[in-house]
Length: 287
Image (cartoon, rainbow, N blue to C red; front, side, top):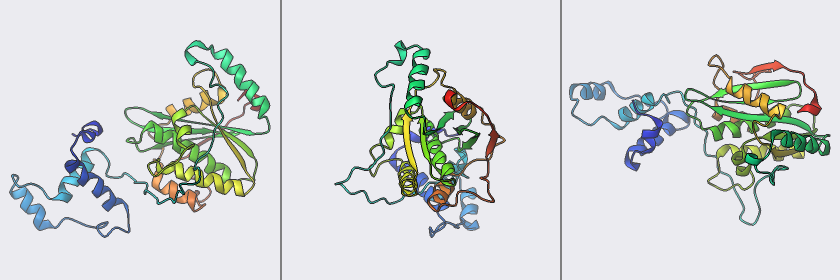
């Protein structure tokens, strides 16, 4: 069975059918979306194993071996980035002058408490992502509730972190305008939304668009990096929830999620499929 690692080591000629067939099978508007290999070709291939299988047979086997048959592909949307204008969002980092290896957790906790004193009128939201050998998941922690999802196991930890931020924005979009601050311990995810270009992750564009739309409605939304595993309770809770997301949760489709967010219709019958939502109570000053 092929692994993702072996896939990355394939030549361009071998990788091309894989990427192409993903487009065929996951974009309904594609002419080959409903294509089925003819029975004649299949019988011919079975009768003559020495013959090189057809393009679709090779691609289908590759998808099956990588467990990607049900993978939902996020379209690479076209974004018009003007070269004379900066595209991105800034984030706060009150801890940047401190070296984590030489800083006690108590120092970070006090710094965070001081930071919250300054931004006490901003409602905190904590996000985190997690990846194991079997699953990839993320979590969002709000004042009175938490959300935890699994996404496709082949997704990277970076995708999980970015998806968590995007989902946090989606959740608050259904409420009244207010001041929010989204905390993430993924420096790479936050840096990715500060300077967008045509090679940026597709979901970073969704974050920028949703943030801009919420801003026009009267929301004030800030982003902030926080160190992980230093005893900041909101971050610890998000980390535990992301890591403990179980196989019983439904997979969250990133392509559907991305489309729905842009269409402002991210809920179905008032709830998203696959949500693990629990009520929690904790002191806001302690998060």
